[in-house]
Length: 278
Ligand SMILES: [Ca+2]
Image 1 (cartoon, rainbow, N blue to C red):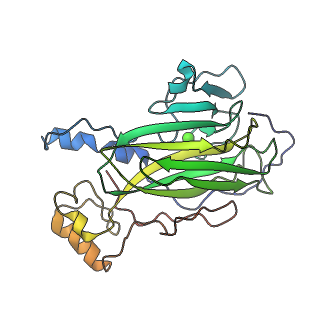
Image 2 (image 1 turned 90 degrees about the vertical axis):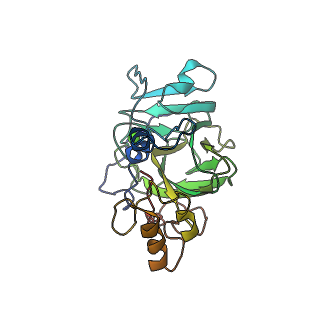
Image 3 (image 1 turned 120 degrees about the horizontal axis):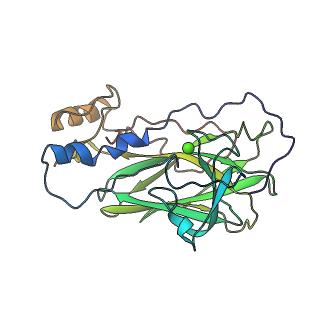
């Protein structure tokens, strides 16, 4: 982390789409347990995608540096710094959501990861907001995103012309993976070619399960999935199947299907019509 100076605030706004509230995903385990659902292994829902909770301490800098090699690695609830250092940013700059976000380069490039329950073979959409710390060169920050069994994608963010600490230019991005098992580790990593103390900025991560075929409605696949049109959970398999029939069995919920990285200034990936995990 290095400080900025003399940047002029402006009225630029972040990406237009709204991410799925992480808390909604966190409800996954609760209702099933209350209703006495099928016995299964413990469910660990994705949590704290906005980096709002944990043991944050601030010596006055407006951020806290977390080191993979110290106990600070697990200061953010649900997450672990798995390599290098990252800065957990509080008042230093304006978060996309809430009060906290990350500079993925602390003293140098770092990586952070969270492991959560998934259903093998299901498709998941990870939505997150990207920006950058541009006190140091170069003027483009690169963030690598990966998930267990998935492909690593590099996301680039170029310095906006109207950049400031209160106007970071947060841009919505989407990463998609197919779960290879009952637990998936999602990792965000700063580009290790950039050894500076200024990295990509990250906030407001959410995970949405996406059905890609009507056949996935079967065998309980409809449970916990929200109809993208009505916004209400499917009550049964028939409703789920009907939804796909209505859409011509296209992969509704796939954000754009292109799998391509996008840079700053491009339109953000849309919200998709996700079958939202509850
Ligand atoms: Ca946040």
